[in-house]
Image (cartoon, rainbow, N blue to C red; front, side, top):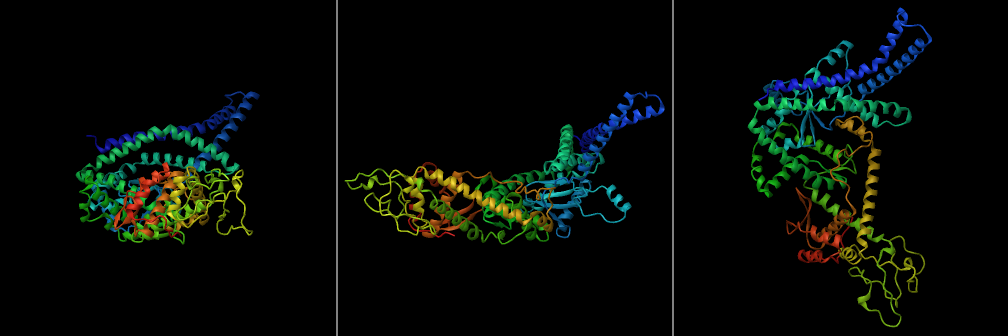
Length: 621
């Protein structure tokens, strides 16, 4: 078995290779200046000729030397001043979590490594060490020049970043076993060569980011050159840096073998389970609330409920819920509720792009209020949007009426297929039509008394729009084969427009200044350039997916208003429809049958089983 020192030596060898690349780049930049010095020194000592050719060579090489030094100074200045990217996190002071700091320091003592300088939480299922020694990441240094120089020479340990779901789901002993190999990484991080190589790589990465955000011709041209040089150096040192980090991780893991090795296996199982529950909680539960302008304020507490529900459903996870009787790791925090709230707000900002602080359009919601304030409101807003799209469909989208003979009376079976519940179909040719206009758009003059022209589709009147009923939606999608595609496209355009308006409102709020006030650590330029959300949870929904969601919302509204159903919350699947106190999870297939195939019979059978009356109007917002 290899010792930890073996891994450190391998990492140091790769770090020296990275530093040699830096030295080579510096030598290339200084080479023209060195040649210039040789030429002028040779002229002064008489060892080199004094002819016109030599003088011209001296001045050409001297000009190249000046240009090379200026470009090298530009690259060095940008690399030194660029702020390396930070993982968005919520800093945890020692005053707010003394027990957690004590646990980490005891763990560092057992591993014989330096203790992390600070602790931060991030809304992710991972833990790592992060170097935050760059002067732009810390408070301004005060004191005399000698004191500041001494502070720079004193090495500072990295910051320990812990995934917030771990604190709520894991027990104290499991968290200690999980953090052992992470904390052990502070030993190799303190090595001067490894630390210098990491600073060089992170500086180049930050310089590339600065060059990518350059605006304006005066700034873009020199920064584009800096970006190319930085990318060239990164490609040259990529393999060495990768192997160096692997060697550091191997050394840390080897050192942590002496601390709770058996419990680490159990803790790794909990990591996979926590990741699955956290992903379902974000995508199925939190995302609908974020789209509504509400953010759940206890996401970390919700992951415990989600994983408990998972252990109830899945026999493979049957024994995990029995651990809940032990002391949770969140007891190491003085105020777990406040920290959970801060981590939940940061998760909404990361994965959805919400504002940095609560406001009238961005308010927290508790799990007890989630069904009424999120689920029910979401259904009714989507149902209202669906009916608004149906009301605004052009007349040409309606199915054409078949030609009607003049003498015989029209056969009801040959009437156009579109008819809404409790509304008469379009008027036959021997009766006067009644035009329908949306509210506020009714013409001032009397309606036309003659029949519509069959040669001009735009002269045909639209079908009368009844109240917001589920039957209207079913009839339109089932009997008009063109309606599904058109409604899906209109819904996609409507949702995209609303998202653009929301993004414009968030940009007007000025999120970067708010992030500074709430103490959230960000990387260079992540917020200022409007790059949120940094990690979108889902790709944009297609038109058909939007149509299916809106039809489902309409069905749920009708079930709530006419069948006594209620909105509910499923910890793994998000918004749920409760009928007689039990969740109905069989609605998806009938809705997809209607949306994709135009077959309404499965959905009508489902409505009959539940007792929903589709002809009754529903309440919208």
